[in-house]
Amino acid sequence: MVSPEGERALEEQRLGPVLRRDGQVQPGTTDQRLLDTEGPSEWVHTDPWRVMRIQAEFVEGFGALAELGPAVSVFGSARTRRGSAEYEVGVRLGRTLVEAGFAVITGGGPGAMEAANKGASEAGGVSVGLGIELPFEQGINEYVNLGVDFRYFFVRKTCFVKYARGFVVLPGGLGTLDELFEALTLVQTRKVTRFPIVLFGTSYWSGLVDWLRHTLIAEGKASAHDLELFHLSDDVDEAIALVSKETGL
Image (tube, rainbow, N blue to C red):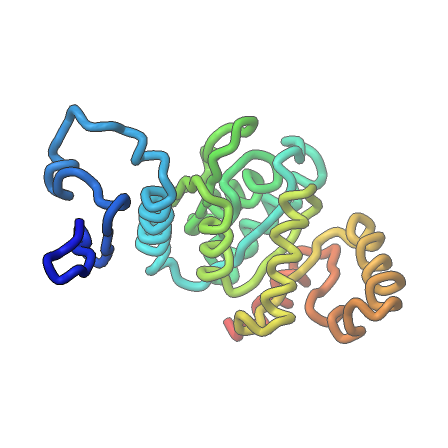
């Protein structure tokens, strides 16, 4: 459309903070689209709607954990078998953390996570499970007394870090390694206030530590003092003492 003065008159639409003109103008109003039950449903799969879901997950997670108190996140394999030596270590670890004054946070699943939650629950402590929507894993284990289920890994991992004063890492697989290296990176880059990270099980973790020392550091991809970002231990009481000392609890 051209005005009498020869200037083009733009069709303009304002939807909250969004300005739309010409071909970007949408029919109807925001309220009309909200209240119209006959309208299209594709919007539930759009990125703006995903942002709202993400925001909702942060709100729910932060709200559930805001008054948790001192806590330690325990990571480990979902495949650790009940009754195995590793499982029993997880149970003792969860129990001893509660006795030291900590709540216990895990991923809420089976295996090592269940073991730590079991120990915490049986000791009368707060046993937290931060679950994740996965196609091949069961839900939150029976020993969790405060649980939150997440759709998004990054929201869940934020809660692992935000509400923990330290990490204890039991033998685990790819998910455990992901959580471990994210924690190490956050501490190394000073994105978080330093907190203790204990790798439990010297024989399990020694190969990784050797690789860090003889490959990663030897080739200049990391500094020698980065090895000081974590501790190795085979003793539950020592692991708890390391966490307690660095957190000041």
